[in-house]
Image (cartoon, rainbow, N blue to C red; front, top):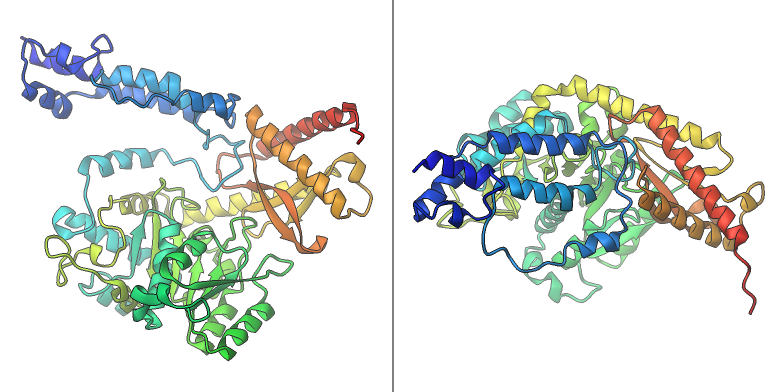
Length: 537
């Protein structure tokens, strides 16, 4: 019997539907295990490469299949009793799954904060998955644990600019950490709030704040544009979250912030954290970080900067001035899977003072020991993959100069789109881009060249919802939408189209295509509205 042939059939041959059928002569579990762990996967790898290549080179934003039709394809809930070949499984993916995924790499997909992945990173991903290091502890990661600390230190230095002696003493210190990796910005922000509460010595905090009455709970203050992770964090930790209005630049209103601070201080309430945003999800706007840090110092509050979106700019000498003041923050969140173009799951939290990492330390006798190098002592998560390798690779292969060029061109594209929108009477630019996000809306013909009132805005909102849904369903291009109160319209809530100019493959021609696609759809919508008889009650 040719065992090698059986192994290849098990993994690669789509004529074989069941591992059991393929090994009846051998009839041992050993053959299956051998096939799973020792087979030549070259053919499988080529198939996956072909699927990736086809997906990556697609220029449309998605298929035009309705979401309900896609959902109907995934109603089978019985797990397969018999296995099939890996090649047969790829056939299933190619026909049933991949055509219905969002084409995030499309240069005309400008809707969300996800970039195409540079081609070297999936290859690094093979290493991450094959090595399968668990960086919760030294025994399951060894050198990868030190690499994670090293790469955290590299970004820490770009954020806080401490001297060399500081990093020589703290980079690989046993008793503290300069920062942690998390699964994303949400968890990083929650860990920052947890740290702030512990620092405020609400150490009764961690156990008993939920038992406090609402007017006794510790207070977290930030703008109304805070990411929803802060709502989650405040609820989990038993704190009160106070949201302050923004100014006409969509930054936290400093007068309103000072008023809120004074209100809580006079009431004898403990303000444990002020939140500054470096890149709001709706506008890409950046709060006055240095001034918020000054207020925090004055009242003895922890200052956290949510730079999940904008934090990557610390690597860009041409653009890092936009983050002035960030070095004064106590903690900073950055998502590597946003501006740094890393695979999803690369959130990070940085501590200006590594002693902050000790406030939330936990140990376990069988795994994470108090006197070890185990990074899991400082993380809310336990088991974690070595996603730090993605950042380590990107910093070495792209480099700071490469990121500087990528960021600068991304912002140029955002400015080009904003300028194009401003030249078209059909569109209204709501927020000029500070970074590489902009918001705008379509104005139907009947509302142009007039003062738009509240009732008009209700109709314009409905129109823009229909426009965005039609564009999404059509699938040739894509922007997302949001709903926010806008000061220039007396804080009336407006439906806004939201473009994220992150993709380095997007060209000005792609931007023109997207806007023309919207104009074409809008004209069809307006025609339908004109042709629809008015209802009479």
